Amino acid sequence: MQPSPRSPLAVVLLAAFASLVIGACRGSSGGSASATPPPPISPIASPPPAVSVTPPALPEEPPPTRGPATLDCVNGWTTPPEGSPRYRQPLGIIRRTTGVQGPLVVVDMRYFEGPESPPSDKGYLLVVQRWYIKLYAERDPAFQGRFLVEARRFGRGVAAVAPYDTHGFRSPDWVGFQWDSADPEPKAYPGLPGVWSGIPYDFVKGGAGLEIPGLPEQVVGCLAGT
Image (cartoon, rainbow, N blue to C red; front, side, top):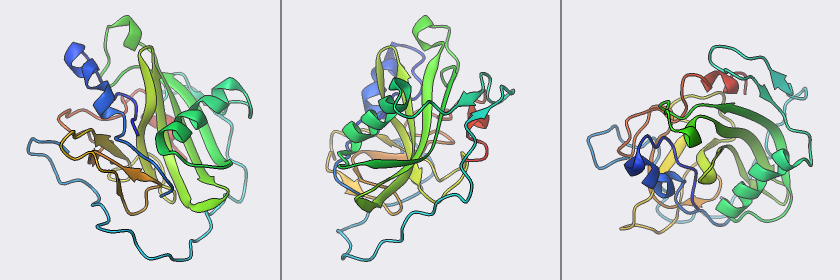
């Protein structure tokens, strides 16, 4: 599986797009070579025995469908109409990235636009399309999580993933994966749907050789209340 680029400022960083797109993920159930804090989670050494899965918790009330423009959510956010191209696009990216099968139940979705992290004066990086999606697989409740999907002119993919029962944009919940050609084998991680290849790092604070946050301060507020 391969998530979206995090923050290319120059050709070198843009070239890192493929490696910042979250590793490789297939099935149901993501650091740096420099001195950075240890990854927030460790892989499961071997597949756990089959256990009963707690059904995903659902909100008592339907989530809001739009939020106003603020200093930390510069253009506001909206929930795309169900079935619209803007609604289907991130789900297709998640399917392609994770290999999940069957219907997906969307619990919450937000679409918002904003600058690259950190901001760039490159025309193709002035506006990054982003989606926040909380969902689970109808036929496989073990596949449940929260996703950040990003789209730029030259690429799109899953940027980070967090456990289903977390909230907001907090460290160390959101995990990104730095591609590691020396260890391409996908691994399962506690709380995350699917299996992921690459070196996991804290997407909120930055890592994997790029000491910059995964989201710029202009859009972090778009996840408030999630």
